[in-house]
Image (cartoon, rainbow, N blue to C red):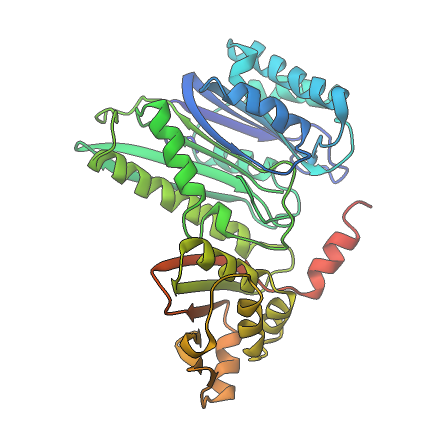
Length: 397
């Protein structure tokens, strides 16, 4: 995240979590940046999201502060005011307008932040800001909740013969079914790109196949979902002022960053043993393809079949048929891995032992070819096991 020019980060412990694990992160730019943001569409958004929407509307941002262990969601005016206080404290250290700070929180809903711990924590972290792998890792760990591992990535792309760098961190393991946009992602770049193009690039990236808006662990949309993209403009590369080859290359790199982070989230989902990649091809429309892909990936019966390595492919056709999209049995082709299990409205003769081996791989690919049009979608899901129930049954206590 600090690989792009002009960014520093820090992460540490302020005492929100009873476990004593890291719970506060800062990402600070040396100069004001352009910022694009996508937030949850949950109708009861967290108080930091409410404030973040206002601050991001200006298109300017110089710092992000994020705590874990407490979502500061459904906390009313006091919770909103606490988010404001976090921004003001960071702004004091950075020397910027408080409106150019965005606060994010993740953790248990309905609890007030312990500001007697958070504000001194901001003071401490502000003196520890740095760049490099250690700073990035500290920030990535500090935003984790039920995540088992920190999640980070970066890409470089040539623009006009010069290098532009993008880096990002994210958190997410449970309550993952982004609809935006509990998932947070912070991406930095040193590209010099106009605000309208930056916003368009992020909007398209979160909706790309197998990206943030195309993953689901448990169908729950968090009130805190946030993706932020800050551009410092400090690269030596040619400014991106219009759509064209340079903008397309930047978008490709951004899509790769978002897909990488999204895959890290789904593969680290609560209790996950298998990633499910659902590909829908030749649907009547793209929206139809998305409906079917999401329905199959979200089906508890499909999830449990994959968890048990059970080649019960009838659950795939059943889920596709109830998705509410155009579908015709006689045209549908269903494959698990490279094995066709259904064609022309009836099952094929398959080796069930081979199919069972495919179902037990770390990643199980399911392809549904509808042969009705040009619509397509690729969606990531995961299996559902006993560990997911254990984690969430004990989460609050």
